[in-house]
Image (cartoon, rainbow, N blue to C red; front, side, top):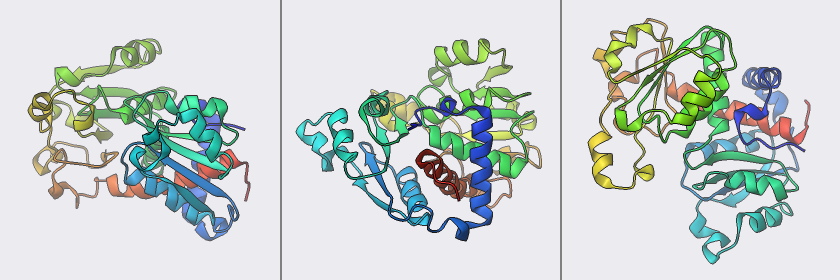
Length: 305
């Protein structure tokens, strides 16, 4: 039995195989329509979510399986003081696989150590978001045709953005990758990512504050929102929330084949006028998220079609 806590739980070979499966699901959905008949996915979401939770539910339903779970800690026995360990032991009696989101870093890992079913980390605090990373990788590979030799711009909240941390770790394993880290001083990438991943592996990167300075260089621009829920005081959030706004004027500086990605939800950081630009790929990214979660469920359950 395997769990998925970080994208690095999969080797590059396993990752490529998973992405191949995601692409096959995209092309031949009918082939997989009953692959998980009789199986149940539990979604344990201690933190609010729209895309991730519904994407997992859609993935399992598309595979012919069923879904149960809760969408907030307040509607679970956590409100009565039940531990994560006890919850997963109980859920293991009801379901075949589980997706867990939790505000505390490491909570899904704690669950995986006592679980008798596969556990997928659906986001833990500001730490990891592996299935969003799988979504990002499938989107990039499908639309750009490769995961190597790319200049990746990461813009916005790089300090608390778990999607950014996971994506850097995953892409660092591919040849010819370089990063442009675009953020205000207060939201720069954490020291451990800089030292343990980028510096340790000799990955080229530069840190800048102004997005206009680097737009012409980018193959991918990965926008992120400034996350109100990660701030300790409202003043800092208000000061930084509109630091970056991607609009038509900035898009004119970019390559014709650059892609704009965003893990969503967006607030103000991408103007709606960008939505009709053919380079805006964030809603296509959502669809790829369903395909890759379908592939992951099949892989962790050991189901071959």
